[in-house]
Image (cartoon, rainbow, N blue to C red; front, side, top):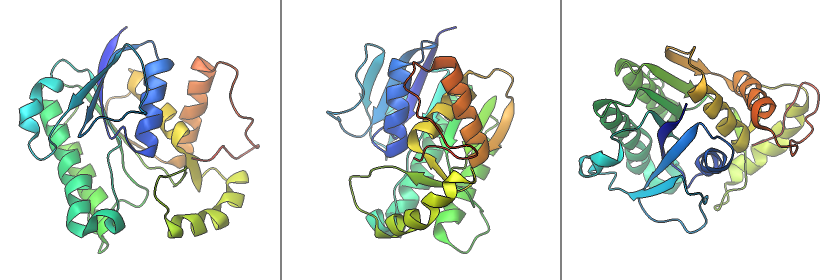
Amino acid sequence: MTLTAFLIGATGATGSELAKILANQVPEISNLRMLQRRHKEDQAKSEKLEEHLIDFDDMQKSEAAFAGCDIGFCALGTTRAKSGPKGFYKVDHDYVVNSAKLAKEKGVKQFIVVSSTGANANSWLLYPRTKGEVENELKAMNFEKLIIVHPAMIETQREESRLGETLARLVIRPLSYITDKVMISATDIAKAMVIGALDDSIKNDVTWNNSTLLKKAREFDAKYETGKEEKRPEGGHSCK
């Protein structure tokens, strides 16, 4: 089985990990199209990668980049602090939904997207409300397979400093050694997304919480691991 996939959001923490894993560890993906706004010098390198620069405000101009793909991976997202409320909604809602619509039009059968724990279209808060709206709209598109991932606190090194996240990690990190519900690494999210993409038993739409993501990441390790896996504490996990 060889598949063609596209990836949106490869410049972010989860997306960059997903690109590296798909490029170097997953032979089932023979072609990976990186759909992005600008060239990124330090992105994953592989003969299977194709870079497609697209205008997210007018995706129809780049519809050919979606055609012929079997799988769409979406790890696109920003923050209100970085982009403002309107900018946040445009990226996390409009760009995600519009890419999914175009993928569906072009015959893409499965879409796998990073959302958020607490997503709720009826929330008074912008972040969970936006995520909830996106999930509802994606479900209405009726992909043959839609996987929505709900990670907990993501442990990663970001280019920009986020004081709130730093403080939260100081509190949450110790808990990750006794429960699998509070924290996850970008790498483990990416691994879980790959396992979902290659699981033919999944139909319609499913939502994976943090515990499920960690379980699926361990399934990835068992299938593809090359001996470099970190030793995880019993009941815990390595952090994103």
